[in-house]
Image 1 (cartoon, rainbow, N blue to C red):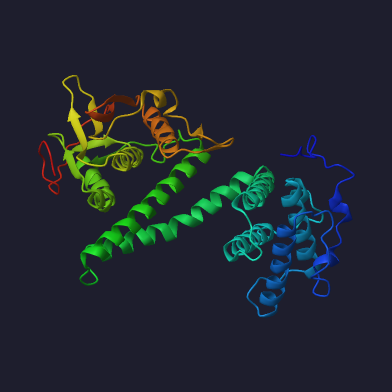
Image 2 (tube, rainbow, N blue to C red):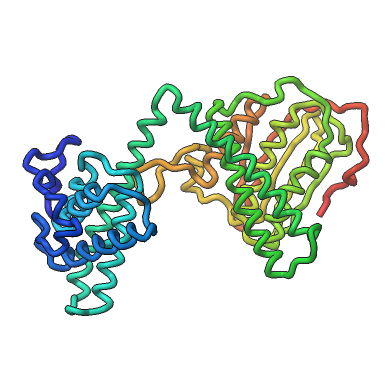
Length: 398
């Protein structure tokens, strides 16, 4: 691997990019040499990309782009692959439009593979691996560069507001997808065969996962510890459980899991039903996600000393001991990557713990191999005089 010319984010003044003639890939000079590019394989593939771009752009098959911009970017791309220096593309001025670099990378990769498959002239696998690996490095560098550009916008004064607005815009279509998928799956719009039933379950599961991420992200932006229902109100535990069951049922059915609900003897309570519902839904969807067979059980149990104990127990494999220390962190170091990312469980569990804490208690965890995982917490929820006769009261509802 050649040494990179980048130093402290600057670009060498002697970089060959400055000497690249955009005209080298213009329609009138497709056979001209590429400045600084020694590889005949890369040169030939780049010329084919230029011809393909010219022909498809003329036919309206590609987005509009200035010919000189495309030519200059292709020249820089060919040089970056040949010299194994992604900076020749990411430091190119003026900046190309977002997505253009990745499109040309895809086209160049396709042409390189097509030349190798055709074998005219024959190219050894070893000779092809070098350009392909270098091209992947360029792709990753473009990705990182575009992420940094987005980050600079989000770091502005209105960055957080913009993010929350985008997340809110996702909520309505996701809610519609969930509703329509469940309606179709239940056969309310006509019969569905077993294959369609399973596909609708997959659609519902994917939309539910995205909807959970939307809600968690909004909670994170708010701080995650402010209750939407700040004043306590009467509510029915049975109604709350029924709403959770209606949401997660398609997801459990898709995996063949049994859903169990245990209700207290006294159904009507006074507390924070919105926050409580969010907590239990997060824990339940998380349990279903990581349980491949068996059950997920949600219970509300009256304790002898007064508080009500809520728990979500699954029959999954249990939490890896190595993950316990970071289980509630909303960002984690992803294995094999340099950047932090939203964890599949970390974001939801972090918000859940904050919401539980905002209700004056603590989220606790018990996990054992072969037994599964149980998240639980206790709340002071005074009984309310009214009664509810919807969901049957008993130890378990399957």
